[in-house]
Amino acid sequence: MVTWMTKKYVNISIPRPLYERLAKALEGTGYRSPTEYIVFMIRKNLPDLESSNPEKRLRALGYI
Image 1 (cartoon, helix red, strand yellow):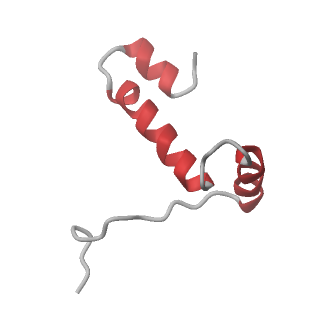
Image 2 (tube, helix red, strand yellow):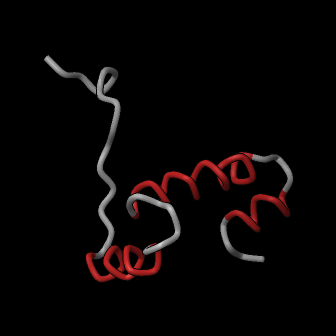
């Protein structure tokens, strides 16, 4: 039986045209897939989003 605690991955849905556009933009960059790039971006920005510094949080959210 697989429970939510033992599952290592979840699926996040994005519009197919956006996924395809990202895949095309990533060609020749060294990223193996849009998923790999998205995980990289989340790991890069999550610390600022979790920060108690309001400016860092707003920047991570794309407001500034």
